[in-house]
Image (cartoon, rainbow over all chains, first blue to last red):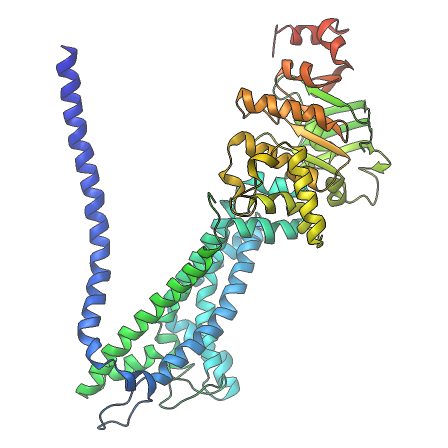
Length: 287
Length: 253
């Protein structure tokens, strides 16, 4: 009975198809749930304390109500700018080396080092920068905080760049060589450009990962109750202020810590989204 | 205008495997010369040696003398980048730059070599796309569409335009139609026929009918050696060598 057999098969197939799709959807939902839960909880706890003065004022002394984390928001921006200026070019540069020139033992060594650096606890990076820069300069600074975060960005950016460049088909490079384009030009203007979407994603991942780091800033940027825009002065950071406020005994500070966390998350999401929108604007049809 | 090619005692290796054995061949200017032979006979390696693309593969090397016009390709002080600028190449699979617009694909060889005159560049791009018979199909979307959005046959003509835009003297084509359907293939063949007015064309092909249709001269390669090289008509009707005859009559390969 061929007809009934084929119907049986199709029923079985429909069931497995349904089961597999259901599992995939369930897994996707389970991944989103923690993220949404954190965000919703932050909004519930923090939104009440987010107001104009929180966004424009510096902290008030303990016991006085009000005040804000404006200096922390600006400080975080300053430290992250320094970190990006250090981490992104160095990371992309070493990624290019690994992908285009690093098929040898030296390349393997760098790859191994990058993977180990990726696993080094952030507090260890902080202590290292403390002893290398802060002790020598004899003061805490936004610069040293940026260096610590920048170092943490390098391995992520480097490995992402390498992986993305390796995905660029070799026929694309050959096409460029065939036009008489030198290798350095081919690497920068053809290979890196072809891989740019993935490289940018890697940079954003690294950026988002270090943006909320607290430990490496404890003895580098150190924190500051007042405004500071100088790179060589102790500087406030949102993550540090959240930490300080959260372990304080004051109820008002606890509320502000929630608000600070919320602002930090919103700023990170905003920065990543802004980069995505600006880099995808020039995309061509069918690219 | 095209220039002739003189190959003398060309040897090529991949690591320890010798893939070309002392090839001598003279390719006349402004003609289409076909290179045929079974898979692995060295015909692709041969054309890749003419513009020093062979050596971009790790552990690959070549020795011998190749003269393209006045240029000594393997002479001391010759720069492979400069060689490739003067000898264009079209590959087996269409390989447009995927993130670039149609215009930027054609202009890539000029732009990335520091050419900056906007007006002249516009003219060169238009001329190259007209030469490769793609202009009418893409002229409204030059800056809007990516090179990768075109069909396979259009992509290959885009790659030909890209190679022509840098104004080479010789055009090497490594099985340019093997990945295309018959209609696209006939367009490319028609194009090759037109191109010989301006360029010297060397085309590698698996397809013997194609060699017979487009080429005045044909060389038959077997196991890294050039077995026979003569007028296409002679190769396909009265070949001098038994092995050539066996191949063109379909007895092997």
